[in-house]
Image 1 (tube, one colour):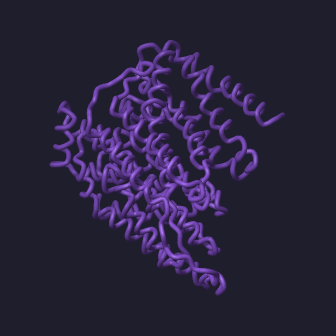
Image 2 (spheres, rainbow, N blue to C red):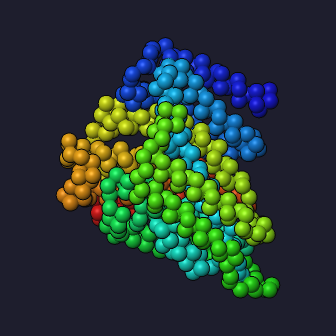
Image 3 (cartoon, rainbow, N blue to C red):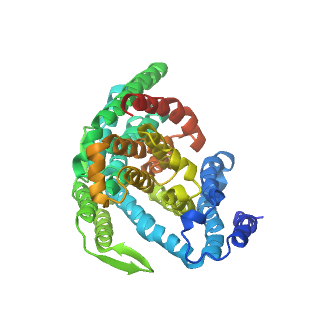
Length: 479
């Protein structure tokens, strides 16, 4: 049986096994709050796509490389068809909502940052010493809050890979790059990471995030020290020849395509504008979208196109720029966003949904930190952040208007907002799908010959032994 027929067969079989019983059990879905009626096992397709990302590259690498869009589509259809059959208009509205409000702007932002950053080439004869690698990580961590974790990661990942091309041990450098540049570094402004920007839209002051500077300095400081010690150990283990600087012609440090910084500023300006300008709404297929968001997306597309037109092809070629990483993210996250619908709906239902026990158990700051963080490791961290922000607001200030409640939370129970914010941002580093740039860094690294750990390998070899103890320490000290 051909791979395409195999996928179709599995899709039909899955619909019969999973979908039809759901239809029979649920009956008419008209007028229901989906989060209150969806069972917990409706997240099976979401778990399935995560397991596919984790297992297929290990057991069927060739199949996965050529057919991962079909696998993503299989899990998406496995959920979408019975969901629409069962809940009709409500289901269609939820699907259109997540694609129009979340997925399409998400991909446009990633595409724009990926395209513009790919036009900035940092040339130079770098030798990936522990000191230089640590400097790269420090710089990336510092700028991530101002150009976004995706912007910082896309700007620096290729120079880091080139600097370590002659190193035998370099996987750990890319993993710590994901930890620091693609996640933790984005915690100090709403521009850094989507959940913080969402908090800004809901009334959290722009510069409030500097209140979590002590937590960020603690986590980043520990990880940078650990990285330097680990990289120094690997450096000493490598052969003397690998440690010697390149004896060929030395190229001076210089940056080409620097005009793309203007386009990068345009992207950040567009994102910030969409949070500060209120221009009304338009109806798109029954989904209310803010006009300022459409203007932002148009501006982002324009910045990307201008970068393509004004940057020479040679710069992108020398930067090893290809479209595969963004294509891979687009295909896989199209399936993830579809199958994540029931998980987010159940989460938003709070104590009226299938996760009522979990929501009710979240009471202390440490609970908010770990539950928000754990769910953000696998789900979209922006709605997870908003869910537990609303949980805290409802617990302490029921009935108060949202913006007033947010300011009251900051004034009287600030530790809870700190726990929610740090959990959502920091723990995106726990898995490849915890934050979009994680997967893009992995894809770019593999495209350049770096054998990155598998989905489970990343968790077992790096997240659990390195990040989790650091987060436990942060809990003890701050929460």
